[in-house]
Amino acid sequence: MTDWTTIVVVVDEVEVDLVSGLVWDLGVSGIEEQALANGAVELRIGCETKTAQHALDVLAVRWSPTAESVAADAGLDAWRDHAQVWRVGSTVIVPPWLETPVDVAENDLVLSIDPGHAFGSASHETTRMCLEAVVEFVTPGSAVADIGCGSGVLAIAAARRGATIVVGTDIAPDAIVATLDNARRNDVDELVEVSTATVEELSANAFDLVLANIGAATLCSMAEALVQITKSGGVLVLSGILAEQADVVVESFEQAGARCAEVRADGEWRTVVMNRPR
Image (cartoon, rainbow, N blue to C red):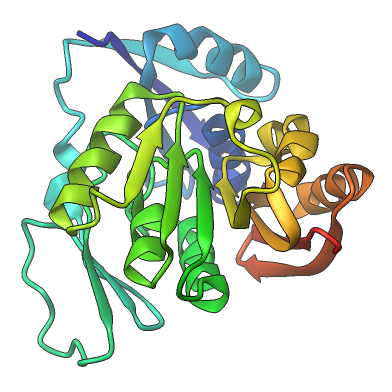
């Protein structure tokens, strides 16, 4: 059974995105925000105990975090009471315990996604920007890789949009479970291949579209490998990036041989679209 820890830290409202970005990079499983009477925000960050000390060390440089042990998996599903349906253009993400909205159109793509203890419910700006990229770049017959697949929402959306080769990878066991469950729920389990394979273990020049919503530091460390698995003329969509981190990510991928096509913004978050030249 996984051991869990909750990290509690109080930050200014303007620092919420910064702190969230830092800890998502470290592999935490969830963040709950609670506004305080003085205008500050309490963040309760759920993570595996083996990740907690690193997160505490990073946060302690600027803030005063504390840690609470969590009995087994208690409380990890409390967010379900506040879950909602998310619409991203023509893609509608519906938690399986909620009703599909009555305003769904015939041409909308409805996905039933339960993120479990993994990232990817479409509540976060970076996931929504990546879903928009799936609609834009996936064409019938595409080969797609979702690196750090979390709930599998991007891989599943790609499969439902016509991709015929879809690979999702993640180092977190909870993410593998969530992706497999969601692929079955959306009738694409025979198409979506899920594993803990590293990027280096994937085939070179294999994918028309590579999606990686995993944070700036991790992206930079994987830049060469991510470019290598992208076909000539293919597209990389990189997210989990704060505004001040975008230039560093672009530079890392350009040094690896890709070219920046666009940097997209949603609030403090950025998604970088890169091309691998032919």
